[in-house]
Image (cartoon, rainbow, N blue to C red):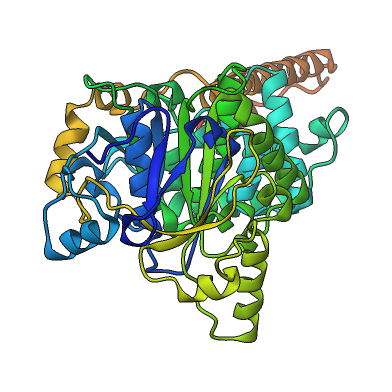
Length: 499
């Protein structure tokens, strides 16, 4: 029967079913790479792998950019093409099955809502989302430092915006302890925040924040949950998409304890369009990515990057990816030929075929596979046909996805946002206290002014010439008019200030 167990992952088979090709579960925390041109079978490959991990009780995360992996929750259906493929592989006993899937969506439209607090995201990742330069990133770091030092929690989008505005209005106060903050930098950050808000990114920040521990677990049959993040809309903002994935890795690294090498990973992540994780990333961020990828293996987490070419991944990261599945690449230009040669050079050669030639000749669903052996050394490259998934090749009906989503206990946990006392409220209260104090000071200043005027008038010597009754009446009338105008101006000033 075509099912995986906890000791091996049957990923492919040679021609005519001559030779099964396996991956070893205890080597999956050494990470991996799935590459190939569009339409060559990468999605099918990661579906087969996700099913295998789920079968052995390992939780899975998948970023669904094209909306084509939701079919994991639906059993597949027989077809003539499938029968032909199974016969080619020598598989005679094949079952269809759906898998335990939970759907998530940053926008809360096609899955359980996903949120992150601003403080949790941190200035480095947030700067990447906002495309800030080094100077602007430095200003954002000052704002985060001030927030932390003064207990001003930045949880949602309005907290962040309020803190940026406060820093701009109090730049001189910040300068003495934290560093200079220029109006130009504040203006640039505010503009980027506005752009992010207009793109709907403000919904990404808030509470309840996603607890990644909720992504672990098994169903009643002991199969690991497959957590699918709907990225069809999110991918329209590539920086937000890639930065959220980096945040997830960072959070997992901080969250999980050291466990060393396990017989199978606790969780496996599949990151589609992986080149976006590294595209235009500043040096400091790249160093952080490399560090997390290198060290998270000891936390029992495996990472598989999915992209078109191995060249999309920095060499320092590529060197840490032990398991590689290469689908076809096409050589239409001299540069394409260089890419193919570079990809072939990364494999341990097989004397039975030329790797570079094979990469160009691979059929859809066929791949070159380089796995790690029991001791962690690369095995000789093998050529084989990727197995068919037990689930549907199609896309799950949106109504069914919604049904699965609403039936999950996590939907109840994350459905509604809440807004606790944080930086926005604290700064608003501070502004109200200052306004009240300023009003009180203005009233006191006016009272002192009037008191001095009365004392001054009382100290003047009386005229030796008595005023006539007409002069007295005129003086009294003008005095009353003056006091009335004065009161009206004071009330007007106070009213305007209150407003």
